[in-house]
Image (cartoon, rainbow, N blue to C red; front, side, top):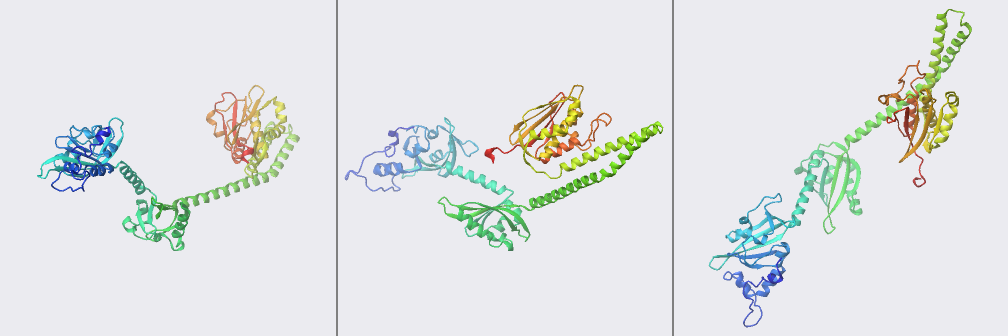
Length: 534
């Protein structure tokens, strides 16, 4: 950086003498017969004041490379380089790499405006991009180079005037980037003047409305209002301006061909740097497909719910109505077996036993279907003590637990949000499943829960025969059995009931495949709200 003494080069490249008669500067008269050096000699103080007050950097070099003038702004704009009084023409940017554009295209020293001016070439408003070698700082300069000639037309030096336009270039780049984003957006983005005349119209707007940008610009914004929404745009824009904020709403808009479409619109006021209203913008998205999809989904959901309800009602009614005739068949077949066993031949006894066994299994199937249909009917989630639900399930299975010598180990059983009856049925089914598929050792069942954010995750683990992980999803389906009815009794509905109960209570159920011995069922149930959540 040059010292203040060098800064005073303004007016010091010639004589600093004042007017011989008055001792003060006379009015500046820079004519064609005077060089800048002569002007400095005549009016040094005025000349110095003008150059020192300029925002632009000014640098003057003689044809021999000597520094004739350098104002303070040059040092502010280009800090670091030494503006030597005697050096080659490129030294004023000695600390900088020079490029012709922001992409780093190099520029030879002979092509910079000062060098060109020293060859007698005038350069106006050239742009150079500089990167400081020592710090990596980048900037952009706008420069003009002017050859200096004496009254005889002989070239004796050159002057370059430059300004830092880095902020302007950055703003232009940002503006270009935003303009590209707006132009390429799939949404319609439109701006209008404060009186509603369209000023910009991007490609998304062209696709949505059917107008080209040339056709739309200059039209009134209300051209897009269908007859039943007349005045809506003006009303909402006035409201947006009053509130000084964007307003989002769903409405209907009209295309060039007169067709109407559902639209999601964001209207925003536009202000200048002084906060004065200069117009507004609108971002418009076509909702037609989304609304059609939502409507179709709602219809399918409603149809599915209606179908499921009808199936549940049918299963309940059919199962209930089958109970009485099956009870009659079962009763008479058992009576036949009790009264005539041994009085007929052995084949007859076997046939009667088959009929009794079929009636018993049919009764169990009907009971399980009734249970499954009830699991889908109604659901009242209230605060339930899962420990009380477990007590209810164990009481129902007391005889089986006693006969098998089973041990039940209880962990934490927290309060949850569930249907009390369904939660008890869920625990009963899982414990009954563990008792059914036990191994050679007496059954051991462990049950407890851990908090998982807004859910409680329960785990019921046994020491039974286990389940191959490949069947982890299959076992929760209706009528899916991994063993024949001669090995283990059952209808293949129990775990399907468990899944239905868990899902209707807002959770999910799965097999823990990391367990290597026995089986571990895990399921989640919504936790009771904490005091601070209520």
